[in-house]
Length: 214
Image 1: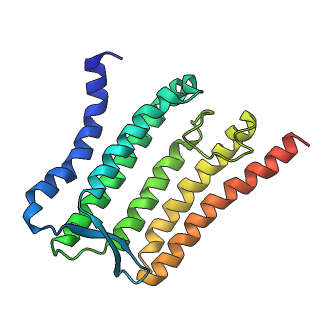
Image 2 (image 1 turned 90 degrees about the vertical axis):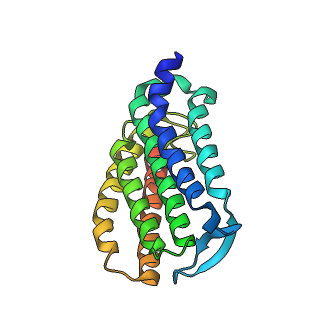
């Protein structure tokens, strides 16, 4: 890819990745060496990590998703869903940058319901992924990778069609409902939704594989 085309394509992702780092630099003197990295179901901090952790995660995630199409043995298939893959990269960078900025905000003493932010951001993430999931073609890195989808392209295609519909509609419906719950209830509700949209496509791929390969 030519340099100008590469820069034009990657610039939005660089901006999204860098913005929370700029924010962190602005409030650097207010940040302790260790920042919150995990909250329990009651919304209380139960683990801390280096303030460099989130910038590192953002950069590593960017590099992994940039290189995946290059090292994937099925890299030719990425050309068939290149637009969807770019949107995946964009939304993942947005997701982690939002979480990064929220952690910085809470760390400097501004009250934010981070559990609500994480749940809402995750459901939006799943919704967007679900909207494009059916466009994914067989590959080794992106999608619903079970032993059965990886063994049969028809199973892959049908599983991703079902999974896409499920992820989109379940997340769309769950998002407004999630605001009815408090922290502990929110956690249970969220994990139920995530468990359902994760397990159903796995079971479906197994049953479909058995049907295709009796």
